[in-house]
Length: 187
Image (tube, rainbow, N blue to C red; front, side, top):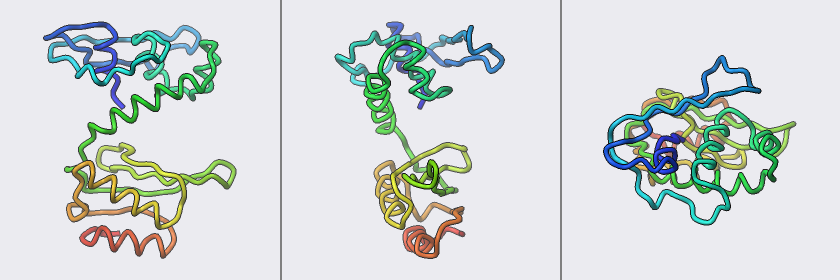
């Protein structure tokens, strides 16, 4: 998720100003990390993107969202002295809002794999391998995960017939569902 719109709103930048880049330099010491915000010209985000009544200032939320790209939420919660559940609530909100804006109309190459923690609680992850970007995750590791992905993919303007290559190392049943849904893709 890009946090530029969130930081633009948090800093109350008006047109034509907009935050264009937010980053922690990779060589920063974790104890003295600095946040670099680049401001450029463009528009401002839709105000409906902002979460109401979270109990935190918008700039603080934007900072936590950027931290969450680099650290587990439990670590961030310990750093700032709050329960991770409070942070997860607004992180989930902003991720959900950002996902509404996703457009998969140009996705042609997809990678699929499952992962778990200590052999249980599996999740399946779908990646646009051309952009090296996660585009979908769901609980489980069976063939129904592909059905959930295809539904979400289509909701975001993805066309299964435009997908050229699917990469996965899963079971035969899983591969059959992939083949049924992505008829023109090479596996």
